Image 1 (cartoon, one colour):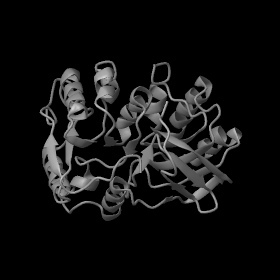
Image 2 (spheres, one colour; image 1 turned 135 degrees about the vertical axis):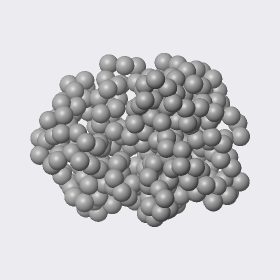
Image 3 (cartoon, helix red, strand yellow; image 1 turned 90 degrees about the horizontal axis):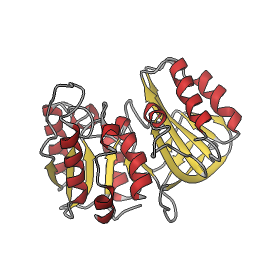
Image 4 (cartoon, helix red, strand yellow; image 1 turned 90 degrees about the vertical axis):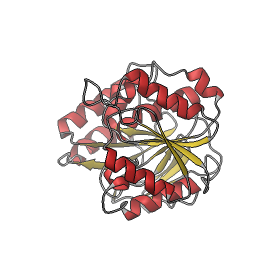
Length: 302
């Protein structure tokens, strides 16, 4: 496991770096984390609203909450309340030197939080956990957390998570490397920035939601032409919720890379949503159609 296992009595923080969380769902998510014996602190601006309805408050306030949580020595894990849009707007507002000096801890989130996963890897060199969020339906739903999602998140945070099983292999083989990536739209949006993705020597995780196949084609083409896939060791494809049939374009764009590809992993959007460590060593194996990790000694993400 990249960090010491989360234990009862530890303090975790919840912040909203992207879209506004539903107050009732977030409250239920908090209660479920507290049920694990954790102390939960919620960022001062986690439920803010502003003129742009897709943002959870101002950029400055969202960045301040995230930085304060990360730099708080009492906090072991920083959960993002939900995705949506807005995390990339914070990247130029964070004091990376101060956050680097705070030492390593765990960031948890997915979807729009891909922008933070990528930038934390580049700027801080720490592994982060791509997983469900307390303000989302899978953890904060009225009927309780989705069972498989909840159990796998707990296992990932305590260092006991099992491999994630996929549905099919698009290209055979086995690959080992640092897992990186996340939401395809966010990765493409970072091209041309200081946080531009590079999958060299790595396993690339890709997933998305509500994107037509031609848009998936466009984003993959952008990443290919930017050089992001040069030297990639393998590809792990997560969920493609409401994306039509993405596999023809995924095969067309990715098979020429000549690396192992596992597909249909329950990672990203959809239910259940398994938790995987980004910036940590992992392995994909098409014979077992699985993604496992972390393994061995972790190396910093760059």
